[in-house]
Length: 447
Ligand SMILES: Cc1ncc(COP(=O)(O)O)c(C=O)c1O
Image (cartoon, rainbow, N blue to C red; front, side, top):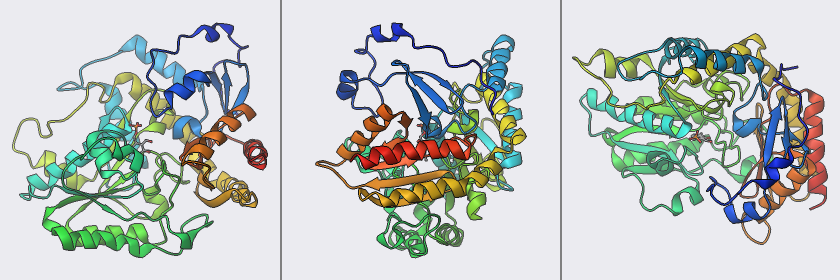
């Protein structure tokens, strides 16, 4: 059992007097929320408690970020000690021990050769950083005209300008105009042939040839990078078809295009290995990561680049600052302390192996949701899964109904449109997974 900081506390009645009017909430139906709020007040292990005093099981690891469970004492102690020793120092032209230590610890678990690490504060920033690295890499090689980026439909790469432009989630794009120039999208891999397949579907590897078509249309010498999530998480867990990622790798190699894996969700054991690149046996040139890097405790993100990319930008540069880029919070000492403590927990408790061991039971319980007529498709891999519900009157209405019904029944999962997304903490026992899915089944039976 994880070592939590305190036992659950009784319901705090003072929460009921919160003024809800000033906080403009992210990715939230603000008016609906404020009419019927869902206020979470505590988290311990795999459980939340809300302001009504209810216990809710965490079926989402926070937001894909707390695989070791909530309230881990080791992280609290490391962060507290760091705040007492060195709360902050400027990250430009100065270093603190934490940044070097975390980069070294990450290099140990990253795919071989992808071991030069740049820090950012969020997954969105990591994506922007990765794309700028790709463009600068080509410029330093004398191919500055390579500026196009190829993304994919139904992808999520965060909310900043480059990220939503290369992303492919319709609602994240349609409100904001033209986006970044020079972006094209491959088709997504959510195809009916792989319906109800758990793991990699047998069909659809040829969809990777869309990258070859982009090369034909625009010319390889205009394309800097292809960016994909190895498993598209936020749209509803699109597992790559067998051979798809390897085919992308081959096409990139053939044309000198950098391959970026956005592992903000899939990193840190979600697929049963440290990174999905290792689970699928395909090594990109750049990997983005965030979320679980500090077990969700302190905002932090990172971009890991191959030595070839790093050397081209840094070692081969005559003098001065090689990469005019960075954030106030890059390698923040407190985030680094949280990351080191988290990585130590992952290692000491062999949590990535534990995720691999729990996965068959998780996928079995997920697959059984098929018995509910309202479930139209199920996908999953490792400790990540999704179930599409038949749409209600409007897109997202059924999903929202499920979210609130599950909340009332004592479970938290993610909803995208009408899709339920599951990403349980790796510290769950099989019985905890049963409790989560029993709750989901009870709710679905009422639909
Ligand atoms: C694949 C991927 N990239 C980027 C992001 C953006 O991360 P953040 O919300 O930390 O900016 C997310 C967030 O879910 C993500 O799933």
